Image (cartoon, rainbow, N blue to C red):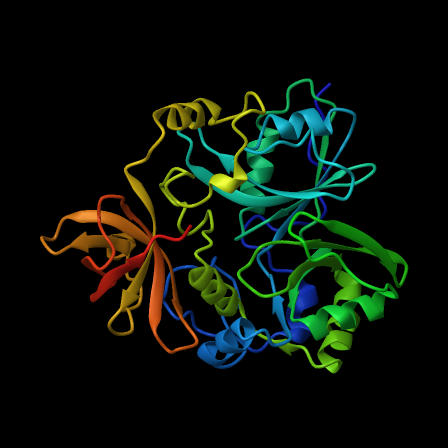
Length: 366
């Protein structure tokens, strides 16, 4: 018999975990620039200063207030999830993490997620307020599978800790000698009566870890790391790190694009077998190339705030649409830059326009 989702008080929209309330500044007006999920905290103070601090390797904490969390249990949990996402689940070792995508039937990314295999369950950390979407997607595909999907988005809180001293302070708070920092490694440690789950993930920062903690434990752990010198910064700092490193996100660069076009191919296994969107991935692999690819744009001035989807279009000197902007950020040298998916035949240095200003194609990440 099919098992249904066990509700845990999760919201149906962007995650709004009440545990964050005493730790965050008053609600700020959105800056109007693309790259962050609705409801994400862009900055505590000056986003340019925060971005520069994070990219310089300073010790920072970044609240992931729109991060969703799912727990899959049941005898069929591994086979079920293996057939639902783009990367290999069956080969995961216990306490190994792997980034993957949920694709639609056309092979377009719907959500970016990290899967961590544990002894008795699979833990899914879902980016950019896409947790409720994944619950609906997964529920629709349960037939006779022995799997239970539990939404933990309000019971757990997630944040990024970056910087060598901040990571050392986290290890000290948990009473361990060191924490894994290689992408794909995960660990669990008891703290105040419950486990804290930690995994490494490439974010464009010198050293960083994603931390998942019970909501009731969030404030004391956050305060302990702040007292050790870690500075709270907003997600604009993570966006700047992504743009500088050329790391795409499904909800930004992946919107309306194939993973291979958007720089998301590392989230795909071509050998794992059937899953939604797999036929499209096989065709792209057989063809060997795509007509669009990820590019970094350099702006001559601050881009204008987003007004509608049309303003995300990238146009060439003749006014033809050649791509779409995903994330805009201000880099530490005060330049404005962006990640965009644009036609592969456009060379570096080509002039384009988007978000009401001129830009040039600076390069192709990767």
